[in-house]
Image (cartoon, rainbow, N blue to C red; front, side, top):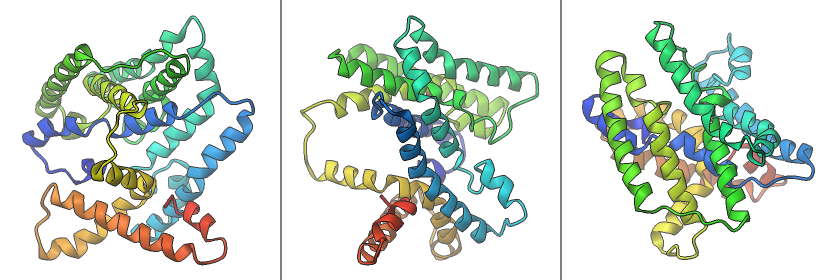
Length: 308
């Protein structure tokens, strides 16, 4: 996600962007993959939603103070627009609330319907663009149908794993991934030439959906594999994963600070800028975590800031 928010502009990036276009979908997929059927859904709702809602409110206040958008604060808070990327949290909360219904659908004879949620939405979005009435941001991304198939796929693979069914990424899936990846590049070029850059590089496209679901399948095979090597790289990825929510919440603000400080005296170069943001994000969170651990109720403050 940090790569997406630090990319350059032009045809070259339209071709490179598909490498990173799985970000939001993968987060929702992993949320589904880590979800099990509950006996008491009320506790599940409270635990999952509270975990993201309190950090969301705190960081929305921070962004409002930083951007000085006080007049629209209540509206922006209710519509998840205090920061441009917070639409994801609205989608996540919708996924959590719909989980019992989705699991029931998954265990029914109509289970295939879940896989049509996002494709149908994307086709409707294409039709709206074709007719000159495109869905405006954030309304094109903030509702469950735009991303729901990712979460549903995570629930499905979790269910298959618990039933002892194999989850494999074979040559067939690899070939399909290559084809869909190339198709995504061509779709991006067409959107860039005939419509706009945002759609060209965006994640809500049919080709992006196929590519991202295949990446999610690969992730699932790695998660459930006992052969994953434990080395320096995996330890680093786990560390980044531990801080991923905090990076998500704060990196836009950090980027704004860098634009007014570091990038005044040196050029902003991709992907060096991505590394800088990740390193600085993890640094401030590590320092804050070590400080907060030493004070009363510090562990709660750590959670409230989304650090862990």
